[in-house]
Amino acid sequence: HITLEAFQVFKIFVANPRKEPEVKKILVDNRVKLVRYLEGFHAEREGVDEQFREEKGLVIATLEGLVMDDDEEMAGEGE
Image (cartoon, rainbow, N blue to C red; front, side):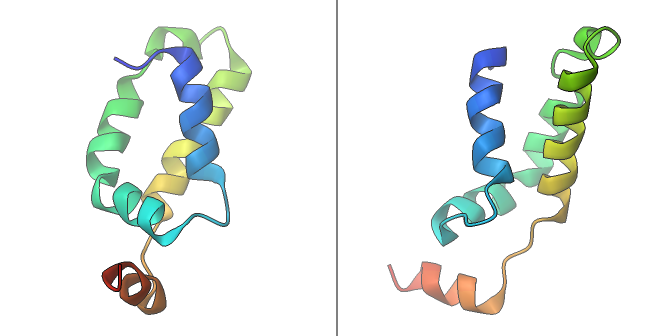
C-alpha cells in the first residue's frame, strides 16, 4: 500500500497538465487499476479530512478522464 506521503507525490504526476507522453501513457494504461485502488485508499480518512477527500476525488476524476491523443501516441512510439 502506498502511504499518504506517496499519495501526495502521485497526485502531482496525475494533476500535472503538461505530462510527458510516456508518463501519460503509463497512467492511461493503468487507470482502471489505479482508480480501483484509490477508491478504497484510506477510506476511513475521508469522513474526517475534507481536503484529502477532495484531492482523492480530483485524482480519480483526472485519471478517469485521461486519454491519449493521436499525436501523443505517435510521440511515445518513436522512442
